[in-house]
Image (tube, rainbow, N blue to C red; front, side, top):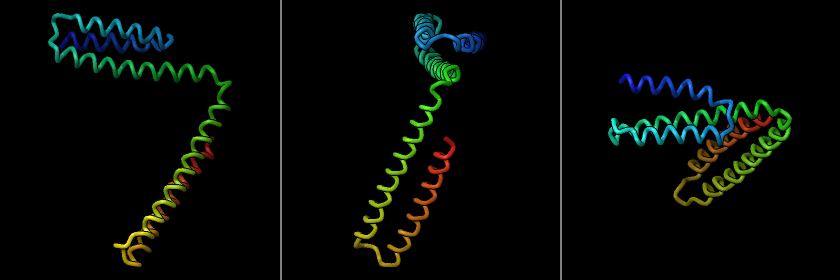
Length: 143
């Protein structure tokens, strides 16, 4: 248990120190950690796998933190990032429109539904569609 706590503490400290490095350097150092875990004779196979999974999660988080810090340092591309985000949201809205039309025609073509059931399903479909579209529009307006 002490080994686990010490390893966790070391990895936490190391993760914060790694945040200033490039992702290649960061991944190389994590590779060395994986190798140490793999060659540790005091651990069983299950324990090695467990430690490697924990290390993988920490590596993923460290890479995300590193990428976020890198993005904050390069704000000159912020305008283009916003444009990309807006275009992505517009594409989602177009996809939502197409999906709405498909679902509506599917309801119309259904022979197993009565007229009242079709009307009720169309109404709920329209409400859901409008709510989702409104959320996307608000998100787009943020950028």
